[in-house]
Length: 301
Image 1 (cartoon, rainbow, N blue to C red):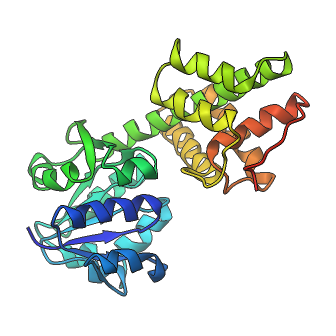
Image 2 (cartoon, rainbow, N blue to C red; image 1 turned 60 degrees about the vertical axis):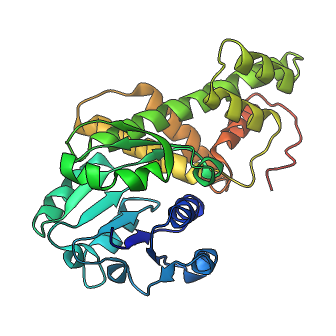
C-alpha cells in the first residue's frame, strides 16, 4: 500500500495516526498547527507543509477535522488534495460532518476519479489511543475493501451502512444526538437527586450499574458526579456543532426533532457563559444553576 496522507492532528487524529504508524503504515501528515505533529514525526511520520502534499496520485488521504469548513478548506483549491489524488484515489472522511457536505464532496470527487468514503467514529481520545473506536462506514464497495486494513488498525469494529456517501454520517449524528440526550437526562436526574438530599455519586453509580448499565451512562455519570469537566474529551462547543448538524439533517429530511431543539438551547447557553471548551458533560452546570443548587465545581477551571 502506498503511503497514507493524514490531515487533522487534534486529540483524536493524533491517537489514530499513532496507531497507523504502529501498524506499519507510512504516513504523510498535515496539521494547521505543525507543532502538534512533533510526536508523530518522532515516530516516523513525515510532516508536509500544505494539505495537497499529503496526497499521492491514486493513494489514500484521511481527514479527521473539527467541522465542515475545516474539511472543505483542505479538500479543494490550490492547496487542496483531491485533484492531486486523481483517478483511483480515496478520501477517507473520518470527521463528524454534515450529510449535506458528504453528498457534495462525493459528487465533486467523482469529477477527479476520487472515491469519497465516509468513516466517522465513536469514541473519546482514550478509546482512540487504545484502538477501541467503533467505525461507521459507507461508500463504494471496492474502495471500502481497500481501506479495510486501515480501519482494522484504528478501531475495534466497523459497521457498514451501504454505498450512499452520507449514510455513515447520518448514523454518526444519530449516535451523538443520543449521547447528548443521555447527558442531559443524567444532568437533570442527578440534580433532582441532589436537591433532595441524595449523594450524587451514589445515585450515578446505582443507575449506571443497573437500569442504565452501558458505557454512555457510566462514562458521563462518573464525569458529572466527580465534576470532571477538564480536560475535555469532547467539548461543549463541538457538541453544539453536532446538534446543529442533527437539526440541519432533520430539516433537510422533514424530520421533526423537538428534543434536539432543547439540546441546542442548552449547549448554546453553556457556550454563551464561556463554557465552550469544557467537556460536554458540563451541561450539568446548566441544570444545577436552574435549580439553584449550590455546589463546588473543582474541575470547571
